[in-house]
Length: 133
Image (cartoon, rainbow, N blue to C red; front, side, top):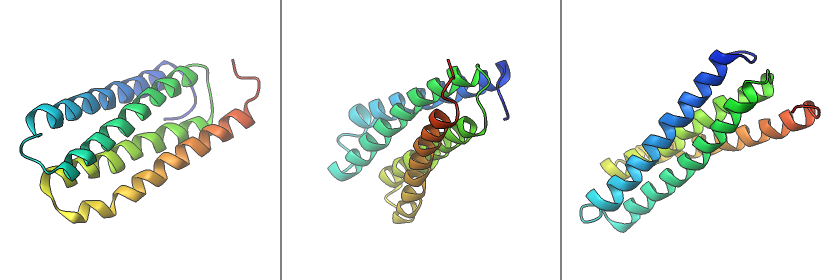
């Protein structure tokens, strides 16, 4: 996805909506359907994953709004990093909680780094485009 335009804006809005939906679904599923089946530690992993995913879903709404104004490479990096973080960080924690397989724990920090990269790219966007409305 490059540049601005309606297609880019729709893509990021769709990504935001999907991640928001998954976040609410997983949080509710853990709180109501799994609370008696998972250990407290696993429920905490789902809660953490759901919280981070929701915040970044909301951040992707912001990316969609800015993308509609023709923002550049830094904003694109922000969106892709947030999306990668949702998949890698939150996804690995969901899978770790549901399967118990510790191999997923090695992916989680990569997702965390993706989130950090996204926020750093947003700083870059703010500095590089001071006149953005």
